[in-house]
Amino acid sequence: MTVLQKKTESTNPIAHLSDEEIERLGVELDAIRQSILDSRGERDSAYIRTVIDAQRKLELASRAVLLASAFPPAWVIGTAGLSVAKIIENMEIGHNVMHGQWDWMRDPKIHSTTWEWDNASPSDQWKHSHNELHHTYTNVVGKDNDLGYGIMRVDEDQRWYPLYLAQPLWNFINACFFEYGIAAYDLELGKNLSSEKRRQAPEFKARAKQTLKKIRNQVRKDYVVHPLMSLPTGSFVPTLAANFTANLVRNLWTHSVIMCGHFPEGVETFERTSIEGETRGEWYLRQMLGSANISGSKAMHFMTGNLSHQIEHHLFPDLPSNRYAEIAPQVQDVFQRYGLSYHMAPLPQQVASAWHKVVRLSLPNDFLATTNAKNLPSQLKVLFAMTTKGPKVRRAAQARLTQQARRAKVAAAA
Image 1 (cartoon, rainbow, N blue to C red):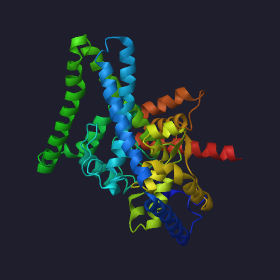
Image 2: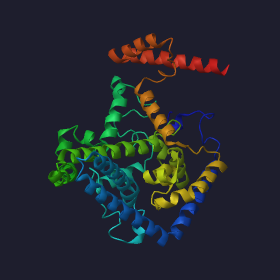
Image 3: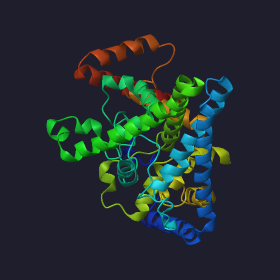
Image 4: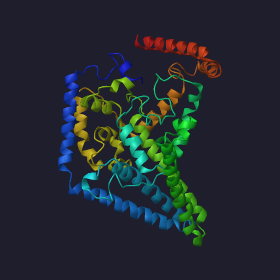
């Protein structure tokens, strides 16, 4: 992977498209969106109200069962139910309500301006970083912080430093505590703690106070109030463990789904300058090339919040999530007719691809491509030198790796 604008004509997936074709593509996608806007109605409102009602009942029932969680079967059943309830609340309900997908119902209880979710990040901060920034600058390196969450190397054109060797570990820790990672990301914590001026800025202090209050409320609910309610049955510790487990399961699931949306091998990234003067058709094209779908059952799609239809979601983030499966064949047809690759694979394959990229980009460019069982010892010596020596050694070693990779490609093509 390298930013699309630096690819050669033979590897650039849109080199065959004229400006007129790109704008015509945009018109076709606008028509698909409008068809759903015109047909929204009772079926859709009944869907989201049913999902919200079922999720709340599932969570309440699971928490009730956990009041007796000292009994192992109750712990298993309650923890499983609470995990599922938290996933549904975050993915199919919270994420999509806060996108404004249901604002057309004009129900103040199911509206992007009033919804607060079961997550460490306050909804208004998440809406800014996700809706306004990520969906505007999708996969633009240096602008879209959802691409690696500001802590990972996400493209070969980013200079490699030894600290990136820890990237797989950072990503795993981030997955386990994903809701807190998102809260820190929404606060732009790294940037705002980097200088005294930023730390003392009234806006940052107010946002940090809001986030800490939200985290305290979440901790109080899951790790104090609910376990205390279990004391009469001697289930304080099991209930505490159940809430921790449910949050861990939710975090790992949401992290995996979101990683699959933009990070698998083959998903394109873009230069900052590429979005200057971007037309409607070009914006659509960037969403199409910068997103990937997950194939699977209806149950799987539901548990991902229909973010398994990531391509459709990024094309039409404000359409009701229950309609993405309906329009997916029409979107696929657009891809096919314009000679574009519709990136879709089963969940295990997409997760493996995303993690492969995390590992690959934690290493110097072309390191994995030029390493095999026979030369592994010598390659590890090169990596050690690049890690412990200075910039000059790293540049020289990188040049050799790049040359080896080119030779290997020429030999393979011969």
